[in-house]
Length: 112
Length: 112
Image (tube, rainbow over all chains, first blue to last red; front, side):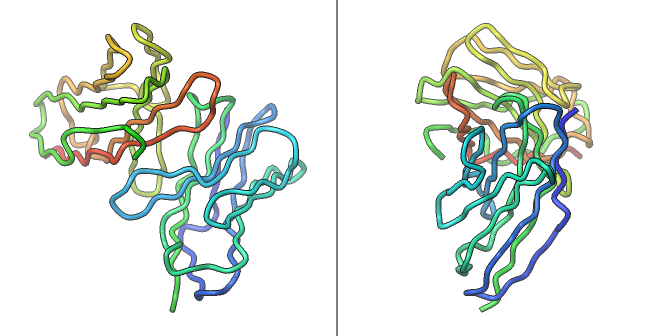
């Protein structure tokens, strides 16, 4: 069965610092992988996705993620965090879009 | 929230009461899904539909019913609400063959 682990419940970074959010998955075949962001009181917005091809994926808002099959990871990165990036981030995995499993989320706080 | 509307925004129920959460879309997307979001657990799929007249169970379907009589609407029914169903409920849509899901703004449900 597929599953997703986001080891960090809460991360605090200073504005302008780099960011890496971890995501580890368990899945028997080549997965579809996603990162979503959720601002307080809002629905989820897709940041980026990976299905195949180049293992470094570029997304919106300056985010990128790298698929590492050997480590079963799909970590999200941003070189310089902005205060507006404070939100909750969810990693998801699945064989398709209709049977996804989400991680528990990582809440990002940005210090001025 | 990309043409996905959810009503109501907030609802309080007593144990045993019934209600229907509404989800409507104006994007003519074939796939519609219902998720619940609970603290520390991310999003979990309740039911989904790949088209009018077709529904299927997700990860946590017990206590919920769905139907899909039109492309536009995908209501979620709680026949006898329980406190364990206190959650935030999200509806999501996507087009067949496309992996990006678009989420509605959510319905916050409190069952006393």
